[in-house]
Image (cartoon, one colour):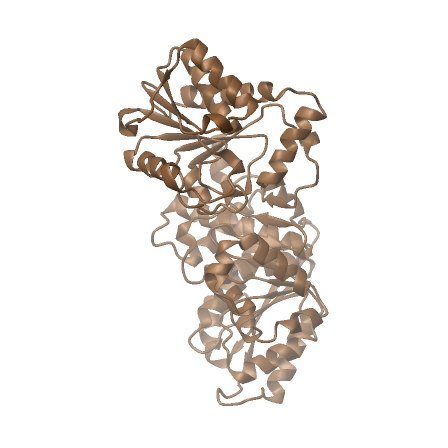
Length: 512
């Protein structure tokens, strides 16, 4: 997995490289500037006919001064806009500014940003810790209004490297060149959108410079190594029994999506426990599934004894279970849910209404005798925490990790960047697209994770891999049609091609 660093970790990494390994800071600055110059001149993305390099007083500004000088050496017309305070220049930035002055580079005081073919943003970097206000905010707004393509050095100015938040105002970059490790703010939204294309460059800072093991990671294709193997000498029982407890009246689609996704993920047997009203529809749509139905009246406060017996027999049968998609929130459904929670024999995925029913009694999660994976979207997480949705989306990593730690569960906090945590470490997923913002997509994810669990995948690995695969399914569905109008069923159908070869989709195999 790829480590993602926060600003403090990156500063410590820089310092260790300089102090312990003895690489001079000016050498690192020179390498960083060279990497930016190469991206600017060789990528074919920017028009370098007239470049403006906007520099602050810190070492990010020092990178900018150095870059301007390198561009000058290459014959590129590059002007400098020093937006910082001369008295606050860092030692290295002062040296680089003095070199630019000695070379006779042009400095401008009040640039018209629209007059340039591209702008380099070297104002703040990853060290920004306070809101952008005053003249800096005005300059950033003018840069954005000019619509001139921007290359950001390390991270767009105004974006928090720790959270991806906009701190007052932020530069919208076409490309961001960052060094050694990507930062959390490059991956989380809205930072990911402001960064444009992120180009990671190695400048001499290696993993040996890490002062502590990072706890935040990006999910990569390495997750496919966790996929349970298939054997030629096998049968349906070899690949596990997945139970999907889902679907109330007029909500059969949720049960169908989750169950079919579990099958497409490789589960050997899938059993659906749903209301009697869904029987004909589900048996028609998915005849491969085993079917059990519940008949308790909607007005009942307690489930019928026969339904309790059916439900407990089903959870005893299952190697892994998913409870919640379209399950409903009737009083008897909650009582039946609690009965099932204490008789599970294998790991559980708790989704949708399963979460809503426990919103006022989340302490029950700590009493469940098997590993539990929760898959809330921000609204469901807000209900569990009794807070505003904005509190969840404002810091999804901390929210996800803290909840997982407090309740001893694995939490999958869904979103444009889904976060997975076991309470200690956290993983951020980057697969997927806006076409997946459609009804049934969450049910598909719950089914995928349950299918992996049924096959014997470890709970944390099933959660991480399941989210990654779910996003890949959405990306492949987008490739085949478009994001607009995507259906959840198209994500399911894409799974068969993703699992055709774990390391590559058919399209990628063709490219070779």
